[in-house]
Amino acid sequence: MKLWYNQSLVESQDAPFENGWMSGNGIFETIRTIEGIPLALSRHMRRAIKGGKTTGIPIPAEDQINEAIASVINANPFPNGRLRICFADNGSWLATHDEYIEWREPARITIDKERIDNEINATKRFPYTDRLNILERANRAGFDDAIVCNSGDSICESAISNLLLYIDGKWITPPLSEGLLAGVMRALVIENLGVTVRKVELEEVDVITGALLLSSLKIAQPVESIGERKLSELAISQRLGAQIRAMLIASSVR
Image (cartoon, rainbow, N blue to C red; front, side, top):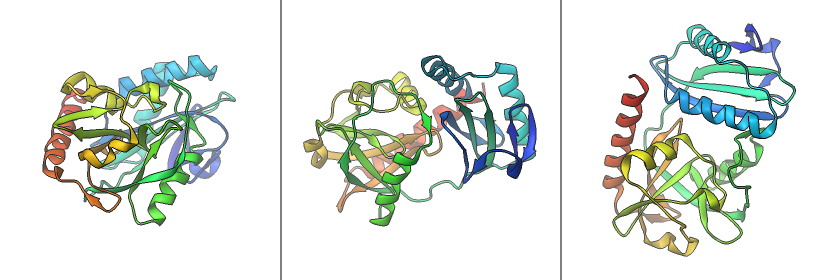
């Protein structure tokens, strides 16, 4: 596998890279590609630049990043891909592109028992171990993902995705003030689809009748069940998921 490290394409063994991640600490963006086109690329780069300014981590010039993206996609072509760009706090940076296997079925999710209070408007940082640990716990229990709540028992997001919840005939997503990541897909959905942003208490979980996992890789994956309870509005979730996907692709290839 070839990847971009600092100034050029190298083999994976020639860079500080393991299990899909750059070693060390820093900020990152993970971007879905379809037929070599990075989806919502400009939004991801704006978030990375903002994160760099907040943390003091240097972000390379736009033309360097664009060269890296084109090079790794051309070197590792996939119809469905995962582009990941990591910017380390020591000034090194790395870009990879590998195959992404898209979900085939609706997700089954649970509720994680731990409570996590993130800082508001936190940057997307690596290592990503804490989130991957939540995901692993859910997988071991037979679920695809897990809802994460804060210490106030408010629903925030899932281990690796933002949440879109169908309650009383309205699509709702929790506000950033509850400590969730400002996801690119979440922002697009709020801007274009009239989604309500409000606090969602954990005690409301039993009145959620539909749900979507929003992320740059999944785009919008319908949720089939929370715990052992099947969600009654799966068809509505599937229709909105298809609409979100079409919106993202159309806005990315203009």
